[in-house]
Amino acid sequence: MASRGAVMAFVSRLVLGPDRKLRVLWRAVIFLVLANWGVPFLLDPAFSLAASRLRWPGELTAAAVALNELENFIVALVCTAIFALYEHRRVDSYGLPVAQALGARTAEGALAGVVMAGAVAAGMWLLGGMQIRGFATTGSTLALAVLAWLGANVLVGVAEEFWFRSYLLQSLWRSIGFWPASIVIALLFAADHYFFKTGENFWDAITLVSLSLLMCYSVLRTGTLWFAVGFHISFDYMQLFVIGTPNGARLPHGRLLDATFDGPAWLTGGALGTEASFLMYPMIALLWLYVAWRFRADRPAAAA
Image (cartoon, rainbow, N blue to C red; front, side, top):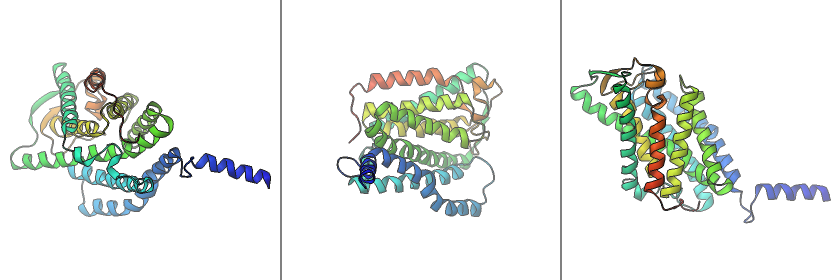
C-alpha cells in the first residue's frame, strides 16, 4: 500500500503543479491533441459537406483557401477558449489582444510582408526566372478577386498564427522556456506543411522553420502576435494574388499577374513558389535584424 501511495504521489506531482492545477506543459499537450484530432473530428464532416456542395474544382481559389482556414480558426478558437476558461483569462490574452488588431504592429508586419515578397519577386524577375506577360485578371472580376484574396489571406494569417503561436506558444513558453518553445512550434509548423502540402521539400522546410522562429521572436520583442499576423496576411497575399506564384504545385485562380516562372527551382521556388526561393534566405535574415533593432525593449506577452 505504501508503494502504491508513493506512485500516486509521484503521478500527482508529475501531472499537477503546486497550485493543484494541471501543469502548463500538459495543457499544451492536450491543446495539441484537441487541435489536431479532437475538434477537427467534429468539424470535418460539416466542412467536407460544404466543399462538396459548392462543387469547387481542384484549383487553388480564394474561396477554397478561406473555407479551409475558417475551419482552422474555429479549431484554434474552441481549443483556446477551453484553456482560457480553465485559466480564468480572456481568449485574446494569449498574444492577440483584439483592441490592437488594427494597430501599428499589424500595419508594420503587413508592410514587412509586402517588402519581403516584393523583393523576392523583383529578384526573380531581374535574374530572369520570372517573366510578366500582363494581367491575368481584369475588369469587374479583378475587383472581386482583390477582395476575395484579401479576405482569404486575412483568415490565413489570423487562423495560422492563432493556432500555432497564441495559446500553444504561450503555454510552452511558460513550461519549457521561450526558445525551446519556439523551436517546437517551428518544427510543428514546418511539419504541417511538409507532410500535408503537395510538393514540399527540404529547402522550403528550412524557410518555414526560419519564418516561424522569426514570428515567435517578434512576440518576444513586441509583446503581441499582431506583427506576425500582419506579416503572414500580406506575404501570402503577395504570393497568391499579386505575384501569383505556384503554391503546392497549383497556380492561384484569380491572380493579378500573368507570370511564368521558367528559371531554376532554387530561384523561382519551383512548384512551391516564392517562399521556396533561395532569395528568401537573405530577406529573412534582414527581417531578423530589423525586428531586433526596431523592437529593442524586451516585452514578453501577458503571463508568459
